[in-house]
Amino acid sequence: MPRILGVDIPNDKRLDIALTYLYGVGRATASKVVTELSLRPEVKAKDLTDEEVARIATHLDENYIVEGALRRQILANINRLKDIACYRGLRHRRGLPVHGQRTRCNARTRKGPRKTVANKKILRK
Image 1 (spheres, rainbow, N blue to C red):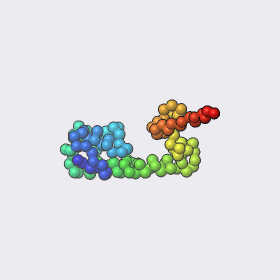
Image 2: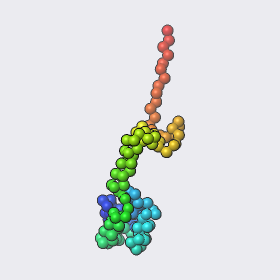
Image 3: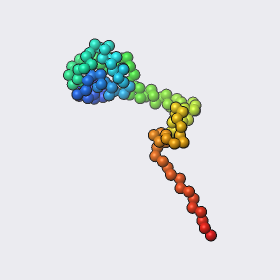
Image 4: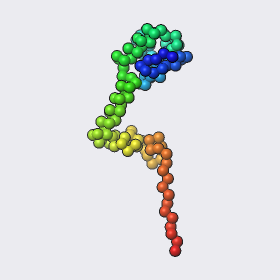
């Protein structure tokens, strides 16, 4: 398994698909990297030479924000929103949807499993 930027990419996938296993690299970015380095996109990842793997790693490191640096940047942006207490920051802080989605029904991904509140039993005399 070739290792690029600390991530093992799968052996039996095409190069342009295998690069998408890196956080922050999608199909478009992977295709662009392959063409910029003049590599064949249909070659399998296991057939890459060590020199080609090193070229891909240095190219991604120099020209794109991927993996740990991207995760840190996203986390820093969310923490900045929380610190300035803007609306989006408050939604992040409360664990609610941030982009205007409704919460009356749905929003289970952000809110978590349902917490049922039982009705109080009426005491009879």
